[in-house]
Image (tube, rainbow, N blue to C red; front, side, top):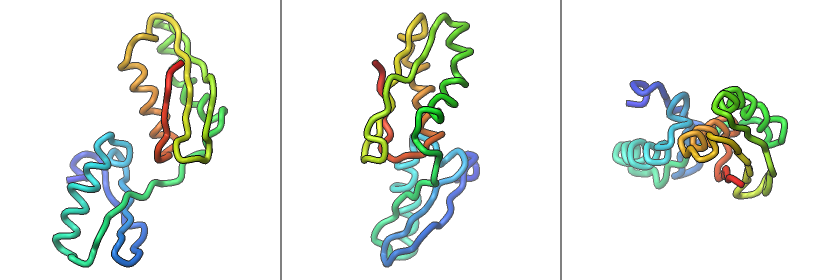
Length: 139
């Protein structure tokens, strides 16, 4: 079912009763990836191999969370925002290397109130950095 949606899964590690899997392609960045991992893959594997106690998601390494890398993503959306009469700036990076790294952005202009635009930008950042717990907040 993963391949039908443009994704796949790879086994990255078996540590006793714990299996680590990496969701790839469209599945790796899908908002439902946790649900897919627990309800689909974990349930199926436990049914076939009762010794498995837990299946956890392994995240691939992404680029470092630094200002220059955030700007790469923001530069990709700036032309759209300029046409709509808006701007976006990186205000602050915090807790880099911690449990909840946070990117604080400020958007101004006509597009600043559009939640769909903010959601798209947040998803692009999450797909780019592939960091568990990454938060995107708005000033």
